[in-house]
Structures are given as C-alpha cells and as structure tokens.
View 1 (cartoon, helix red, strand yellow):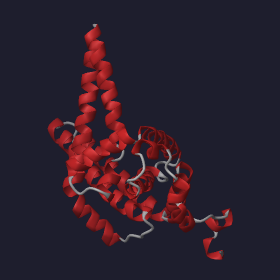
View 2 (view 1 turned 30 degrees about the horizontal axis):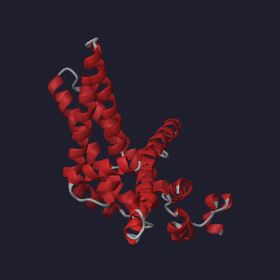
View 3 (view 1 turned 135 degrees about the horizontal axis):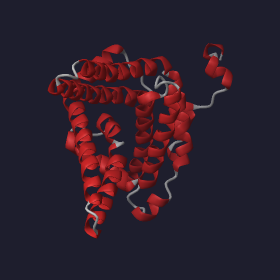
Amino acid sequence: MTGFFIKKAFFDGWDNLLSIISLNVTVLGVAFGGFYLAGSVSGIPPLSVGILVLAALAEGVLLLAISKLMARVAAYKSFTFRDLLAALRESLLHGALFALLMGAAALIAAVAIPYYLSLGNVIGFALGVLMFWVAVAFVLSMQWFLPVRSQLEDRFWKAVKKSAIIFFDNPGFSLFMFLYTLVVTALSTVLVFMLPGVTGMILAHNEAFRLRMFKYDWLEAHPELDPVKARKHIPWSEILAEDEETVGTRSLRSFIFPWKD
C-alpha cells in the first residue's frame, strides 16, 4: 500500500503541476504578506501581533480549502477556480479554528515543556516528558485533520477526534507519513517551496487517507472475520487492484511528452 501511495501521489502531483505551483505561491504570498505588514508596523506591537494572527487565520482557511481541492485530485477529479472560491467560503470557520487550535497547542507545548523541565526535580522531569509525548501524539494525530475534514467529517471537533482515532489505529503509518512530510519539506526547501510545497504535502496526506480508508471499508464488508487477525492481514493488493489499474504505469517519455502517447 505504501509503495502505491508514493506512486499515486507523484503521478497526481505531476498531472496537476501548474495548479500546485499556483496554490503554493498563494500560500507563500499570504505568509510573507503577513510578515511584511507586521514588520512595517513593528513600532505598534498590538497592531503587529494582530496582523500576524490574522495572517495565521487566513493561512488556516487557505490550507483547508486547498485540502478540499486535493481531496478531489486524490479521487481522480479535477477542480476549477470556482471550486477554489467555493472551498474558501466553506472553510472560513473551520480553517480559522484549525489555525487557532494549532497555534494554541504550539504555545502550550513551548511554555509547558521547558517550565516543567526547569523545575529540576523528578516530578517536573516526568511532567515535561509526559507533555513532550502528548505533543508528539497531537502532531501525529493532527496531520490527518485536513484530509479527515475534507473527505469524511463536516463537524470540527468530530474531525479532531477522528484524526486522533486514525493515528492511534495506524501509529506506524502515521509515523511514516510524518517522516514522509519531513523529506518532502527538505525537498521543497531546495525548490523554494514551489514544489512539492505545502500543497504537495496536503495532496499526499489526502492520497494516504483515501487509500487508508479502504481498510475500514474492507473490514466492514467482512464482519465474519476476527477483527484482530483481519487487521494484521489486510489484502492490499486485492483492495487496491482497481486503483492500480486506473493509475497504471508511465514511461519517462510520457511524463515529459504526454501528448506523444
């Protein structure tokens, strides 16, 4: 399943190259625009901080809207500029809430972990370590929020809860996706975040989530099987057969000159 995921994410990313670049430029524009405006009024701290907060909220809305578009790509569908506008409207509340949640979690972790460790006793050390692992679990869980909200759950806190469920039910795959994101981030840095960039990462998580959900569809379709044993022997080749046929294979020439095939 993992190999097919990487292949499909790459193929879909290549097929939507210009759209991904355009969306990445938009994400970077909002980020740099916010920092520039905040810096230009740095002499007025409340206004500067307010601008940064608004930029963060705008990024949250934009990321959720992009996730909705990438969910379409993962499902072999296209999207238009009108779809982007509709996604932005639909993401206003939950995108802003997502940004606030991530910001609050980062602030709590940044303050609580050093504080507990600085106490210099066993209890403080234990609490610091506990907070660290809670933060790790939170990060690994919330990497699923955008695809869960885009593909599965319309309610915000239900989406947060289901993101955690996905992590705890798939800890190994969640860790793989986190490491995958780190690799993509390193590659994006070299390419100035034009490619794959944030949009490429969001596409990958939507691809991974869509494919992972097939496991639950298969388990639901086979209630006669022992759940514990069935989870250890998911027939991915059978489950993904249709998708693998749809994605197919490509030569290097087809990537560079697709009109010649």
